[in-house]
Length: 144
View 1 (cartoon, helix red, strand yellow):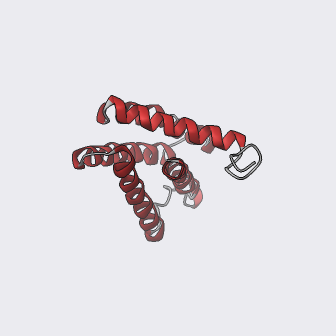
View 2: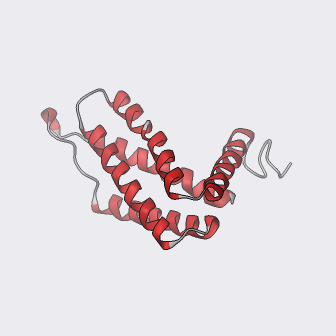
């Protein structure tokens, strides 16, 4: 389960990082920001597919749930891209894009069963506990 949460957190961090990078790569003289490169898109797509496969296995998702999660995540990604490419200070835009996490949680709560959502929350809490206390084998981890 820790591997799943690690990948989920990495996927969210990567999404925010990619959105931030794309927003920061504005064209000279106030032009519109560039879009992701083909390589960035391919890496992001691959990472997302791995995330959905792991979620499907660990949370025992149906094909419909995976499809619905993809659609919801696509909408959020588009919202984040719109925020980052819009006007304003980069830090404020990044904070606003990070605020989409609440919307993501609400979407997941609608799509997953209560048991699946609870398991996801437990996995996230465990991962966050491990991140604060050190990775397994590190200071504060299970390896000591």
